[in-house]
Length: 378
Image (cartoon, rainbow, N blue to C red):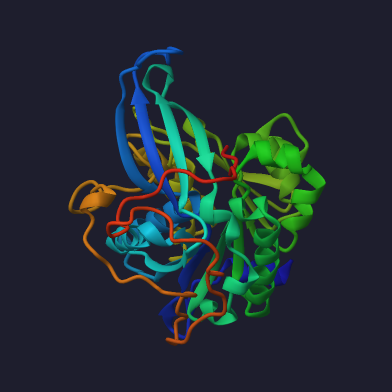
């Protein structure tokens, strides 16, 4: 446990702020916000936007934003796979948010796409229609230990657990981080997936994680208790630090088998709850990297989550306004293979080259919406 506590306190290396590496999904979100119930067989009026998203990418963007509000400014990096056709757009959007993108363009699958139905008349409740695309194709070949150079925390999106290659990547990345004394955090991502996969299997895949950030439903399943607060305490006997998000009720912090704090959330008028959990996690991690204790870090997460629900989409507002649609996005350089690691070399792994490039044949700036497979959502 002492080794875990040392990792949890990591935030500065060699006198410089240590960075955050997020490994996870990058998604094109099609958000449809409707104010009347959906009517089968006919039209329902809605406000529809195409936005960059994905739990892993959203966490990185909120961490970068929170970092920008702090006197300590560690770098935030994101490793993930996208379809080659719209990789330029996602790269540019991440850079605009202050994230260093380490994206692997995939020639054989489009970027993951999620249609988000937001019922404005029911408290901004969400329904997801999901195409996994390239997100499920990330694996060990895309990893290099040198990706951790200058990193103080490694965050793994729970969506990595949805595929065998993703689970192998989780094990490899976790082992690399532990060998360097780097704290590892995971958000379990989906109560539905946990139920289908089995609690025991998911807990085994999470062995060695220093910080677990489940929502209430995920905590109930993993902790084996109907009350998320009790579940948080139970989970903290297995993981050194557990922070459970409770939506409008805030969050609970648990360590060593006991709840150590209940953190309230600021009042907010919900417009779209899509990115609230990701915002919480990103701000929590940024605060921990800056030296905050778990309770103060959870308070930062609650503030970010309350801000997130007041706007459409899963990411923070950019300084220059909302993200432009993919057809109007400026060109940005894109990695033509595996991501460069901090010393400028290339990490192992590349697209396998099977099949034709996906997306538009007229420049590849518009996301392709479609493909086979499904990535469950919470």
